[in-house]
Image 1 (cartoon, rainbow, N blue to C red):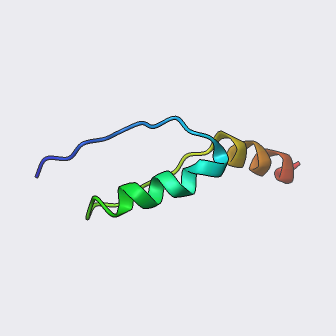
Image 2 (cartoon, rainbow, N blue to C red):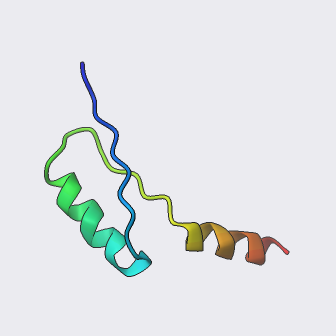
Length: 46
């Protein structure tokens, strides 16, 4: 089975919309890695 991995740079606000559009085009799934979410997790750990 062949798969394609894409990297799309967008704003935090638009990431859910982009993921939704991609989700409708695939049966494999979509992952979001948001730099702001990771920073918030680090701050909350302290």
